[in-house]
Every structure is written in structure tokens, then in C-alpha cells.
Amino acid sequence: MTPQNKHTKTRFSWRSKVTLVVLLLLCVLFGSNAIAMFGKSRDATRNRNITQAELDALKTKETRLTNEIETLKTPEGAEAMLRSKYPVVKDGEGVVIIVDDNKSE
Image (cartoon, rainbow, N blue to C red; front, side, top):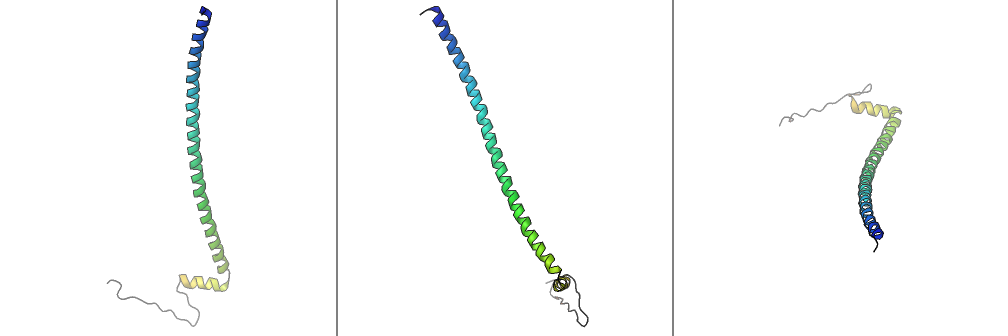
């Protein structure tokens, strides 16, 4: 073996070790970034599901309120709402209030 070949072989071995270390560090870096991206994706999916549930609840509430508004636009609906909330009577009607005497027992 000539001195030139021995020197080249040693130099190649040193470079391959450095290359392996650099590649290992790159793999660790990319792996940690992939794990972080997976966590963010999972959080985004969870937030999307929560937001979708809130949207569904708001749509249901909107439908209910729209129906109530439509009912209140009629004279019968307005009268029913007033009678349910307040002790209101028409002319010729009377109000009966029932009191429970055994309330404290």
C-alpha cells in the first residue's frame, strides 16, 4: 500500500463519520418537526370539532328564535306570551292567584 492510498482511506473514513453525524442530526431535527406538526394537526382538528358543535348549537338556537318571532307576530302569539309572563286579563275576565299555605313545612 502506498502512502497516498493510506492517507486517502483515513480521510474518507473521517468524512463519512462527520457525514453520518450530520445526517443523524438532520433526521432528529426533521423527526421532531414532524411530531410537532402532528400535535398541531390534532389540536386544529379538536378545535374544528368544538367550533362545529358551537355552530350547530347556534343554528338550533337561531331556528328556535325565528319560530318564536314568527309566533309573536300573530295576535294570538303575542297574547299568549303576555299572559304567560304577566298577570294580564281582558275586559270581563278575572285573575285567580293560588297561594300554598304549607310552603314553609
